[in-house]
Length: 346
Image (cartoon, rainbow, N blue to C red; front, side, top):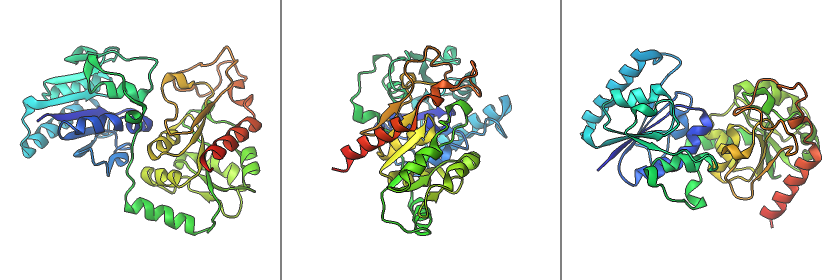
């Protein structure tokens, strides 16, 4: 039996999109995951994961000493479990040289990663990264190597597993302002400034008479959420900075629809099956990071020749006009929302 070691230390959304790979590998044997301290809670209840090893690459595990220490920890863990190290296979979902060195120092004999990754020279198998695929499909292809077959859409859907504590946290938040109106979740934040659509307040003013508004985001999104909370209505829920990652996914699961920027909440929605409108500005869905939940839609200003301008989204618009967001008006988003809700509430 093969033990799989998946190393994914990229962004939170990348960890969510790695879950189809984890599910596939779990069919072959135990799966251990090395991920960041921030991402580790996402996998807390995943039945496909035997153990999550939090790798604090920017803190105590920084540098060569941290990599070596984590590698020793992995070897000790496998000895304790009785795993034969000759039957461990590492999958480098994050392609840095550091991740590859970690697998090598852990003495993992089989190491699979993408053929364009920084750490590719330390791999024993290199898989083509197919640029036209969704990133969930690209990551899932690591399980099958160079002969990766085409996968059906259902196999690409990520999965998250909120626990009882997460459900209770959402129950308490909703109970503070009781309402039986359908919930529309809004996620106005992003770590990348140019990805933040500027009209969430105007959209909220339109939606508040018809729906219960839930605002989701992390602690860094509190300021932007305040700009819309005061027009969201008496039964609105501002969960920004109040819920953990899985509890946020649970709140999105209970929503009729999510409107979000190209950021983590769209991946949380994909993992719980909530229809999503994702607003793309400096980035585009063709990069492979669009929503995967049924009835989802992406919106952007397709006619701009300067778009896309960055793989993640620059801090400020390189040309100074930021038309990729400013030219996407509220009418278009509101109409898309009505269309999706008409399809899903029949």
